Image (cartoon, rainbow over all chains, first blue to last red; front, side, top):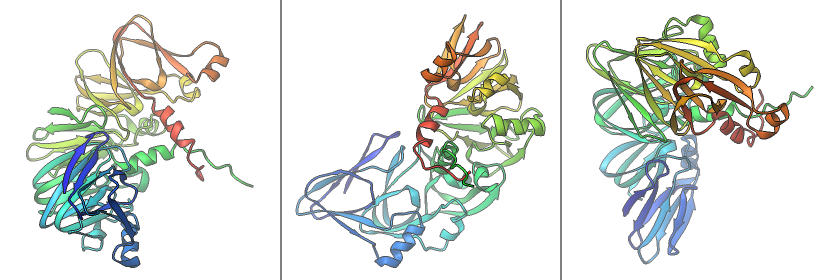
Length: 224
Length: 227
């Protein structure tokens, strides 16, 4: 699999070249163009029950798997929101992705929403962290630019700005007054990372943007 | 203090490097990330002793968060990164001379030597529905402002007209007056609403998109909300 990210950072998309019979799993709705020899198989991966679990995690119920039939092929992939993309390769290790940021992965990468730390993140904002493990490629996207921080020791992030982080980092989520989620819950959530590893942050927060737009919706007239 | 702005102009991020015990004051929702030795102090009056009433004014009228947060690096150097809610640019305005008038939603952060005061754009402005609400920043230091879209600096010398929704900030040496364009009929039909007529000599910063216009463009297409 060859991945080339173009249009970065404002409207990034990924051009993925597949070898003959190679596969890629893509978040539902993210395929923007492809060669004619790619076949699509849609299923609730791992059965209906784990499909439901993924839906709880903010992902689509169905995962789409594209296969380059008999010859090399190309697929172009774009996330739903404006922003940047990154491509990382796993070599048997683990990698953590905020569920709304996940875009695509190769079949050798397993995605788990039920790992021990996932509960910690599920704190009122619908924030859920996927654990990716195995060997292969992972693609993810951001709202706004991606700011990479090489954490050595400790670093703290507003949870809504988390995109992804490496396995060398442990974390703890705590409440802080006066942060962006003030509007939503009266308290903001901050994630304290410890250890060493790379952290990917998005420069805009989807929840705040959506909340801002919500304020411009018309108000339903009161019925007597 | 070292302030770097990265990822300009679409999704700018302000990276503020703080020396030991150095502080920066920021709008409540602005913090993206920080080093673990940075302490957050939430206060209604952090920005120049605004007090409860001014905090309320900020919240209700200025489109700003109720709280100002002060971030302080403790026991060593640290960093705080800051971003606004909307896509767009961030710029640093060094303050050495005249006070600066900042449109409420364009204020992101300021150094502790800057005092912030709320100043009405005039009742007329508020009644006009544009909700133009200005913060007055004075003192010595730096103010960080954000724009919806790109930010554009105009050296004003004499009369100059800007749609009120496109104002980011301007030097206090400029006088300003909110007015209709043409007749009432024209105001209603032209979609131009209220404009601000500047006069005098000073710098003016405008944003290339009007947040309210965007909000209405999207919000009017969504199903109505309950309240």
